[in-house]
Amino acid sequence: MAQAGGAAAAAVPAEPAAPPARHGAGVSQRVQSTQPPCVVATKKLMAQKGAEGTLSLAQGIVHWQPPAAALQRAAELVASGDPALSQYGPDEGLPELRQALREKLERENGLTGYDVMVTTGANQAFSNVVLALLDPSDRVALYKPFYFNHLMAISMTGGGDNVAFGPRQPSGHPDLDWLAAELAGPNPPRLVVLTNPCNPTGTLMKPEEVERAAALCAEAGAWLVLDNTYEHFVFGEGRHHCAAGPHVIHIFSFSKAYGMMGWRQGYIAFPEDGTGSLAAQLLKVQDTIPVCPTQISQHVALEAVRQGRQWVTDQVKGLVSNREALVDALSPLGAENVVGGEGAIYLFAKLPEGCEDDNAVVQWLVMKHKVCIIPGSSCGLPGHVRAAFANLKPDLCAEAAARLKAGLTELVRDGMPAVRNYLDEQGAAPWP
Image (cartoon, rainbow, N blue to C red; front, side, top):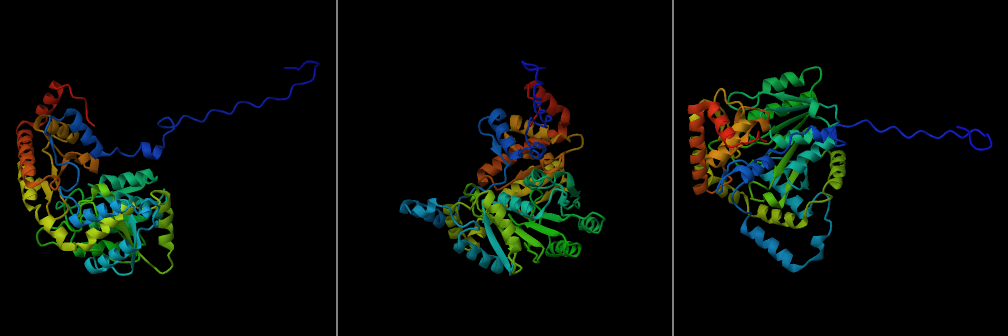
């Protein structure tokens, strides 16, 4: 079009093209493809569909609080009005807590030459490690069933399509022959994840198994990340073991042993090679996510550590009756279909043939039998369930176990049609 006076009009730049539509209307594809948090889903299920008094054997928590001395220390600090508590603390954690943890690592875990970074829980510790060690194209070895938050962290950082899922033996222990073959293959994993004692199977690796995994990773030039959240939860004659090496990183938690779930305290134990290179990379992640761990929580953690291991041992001893009650509750499924009880706070069980829809079974247990557990599909293994035995004090745990046993007895007798008929009668939408 010509302007007045006949001069040619300057070309008008075209409107920029709209960006192509993205998955989830602009939401990150990495996060969009990450599985949702199953514990949140079970809480919503109990709130919306569970009758009053529904008991949970779902989330992995303990029924006790931190040591009284630790809580008293928190009260004293708050009462002191010390303004330093409201300031940012050191990114890596309070020096006195880190030193206490170094001494604990050497004394209880046999780890020397390891440094410590305090985190806001073990999940953040694992996320820090994944971000510091992995690029999106790197492969990760993860055993099924897995701890769901491990896969979630890997997926969010872009590695969800590069996970090699390994099998477990009938005992629930990881198949290390599979790992040896993967690490010797043309595209070996850069990082191997093991949880010991295991969430969700409740199994405890033997020291020689841990050492073999560490040796395989060393030979292949792979990182080994050992999640020791349940290090104190060992039953029977077993013994928790930590492997050491310049390629082995450990994750620990205060949540379970010290009843500090809501205080959000964990830590990374990583090999110090004298150059500080790994520490520097972990520090970048730490400063970006929490900046620093909560100061008052660290003081609670420090006082908890000072109580000594015996305090934790006494709490764990009190779980034996709970564990036995859950073993009995799962007995309708057959002993050959249940693993766990060696360590951690879980039992993992296979549902009867034809009952592979574990989500529907969990929904039915909540609605009809007033008890909640975790579906195995959240851990990568449909047709299975995870039951936790530390959530409730013995009297309530016994009641929850009785409800679960009644439900599973009915499931074995009547099968999946009875579950579906009940859910249809209640007008229940598919869950989650």
